Length: 338
Ligand code: KPL
Image 1: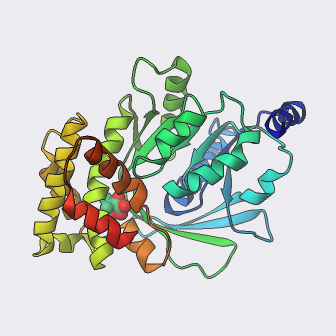
Image 2: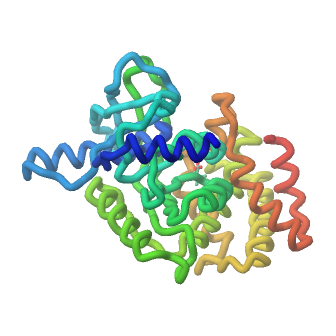
């Protein structure tokens, strides 16, 4: 039995619990987190001679001739920060493991998570804290079935990937500061004390790295709220290739209204509580504050990359079907973008 022998193999050879936080997925959010955490650790080491922030290992698909990459971050102020980070290709992790990470943050797109899990299994112990940073609501429930004590994060930090001119340099544009929430996937009551403590520790890391962040004990509700925003804005701007702010103009403003009405009916049936200001006001506010953005799904369409349409509209479509609700606009956008 290969599963049993690989488990035996890993417990015999791995005896070193490292001090590294593995960030898997060097996209916009992965690079941003890696650069800010590594630079906060470097600052603490320089000023205090020690730091309890973890060392970072960034893991991606690209094969590089070096193990050190430079993240070149343009901050919202326009300042440029260059941060060196250790990098490893995910395929080389199939070799016998050398360390168990202190914690893992998965920042791939939602559809990348199952492959990551296949590689990760031999590197973790059941108590290794793993945090899913995906949009939508497909990766998290899937991952929670495979790893207990799963943590989730949801962030409104605005970041995108400028074109890269060198394989060793990973540029990142940090466009706008936002708010990050991080906490256990499981609802309160089923949450172990260890998961809650891990969430608080990770919020402390984020705060020290300059992110406005809070621990949350209602992550599923927060993820549904983020999904409602993404499900309204992303498919429409990707389908019509427009910036977020153009959704305020006709005919798109009418489509936004219809999307909000379909989504709120589904979330009401699912008993997800509405935000205090109501769904339409929440979404209008995000459209206003991100008016100049090219949303992530539009960036994916323009770069001919797979989109997160399944992770974002899939959970709404299946919930609508369970409750016998019609969502014609969302169904049409799903078909157009699949
Ligand atoms: O999160 C976003 C995204 O681009 O995915 C929104 C809120 C739509 C802002 O662009």
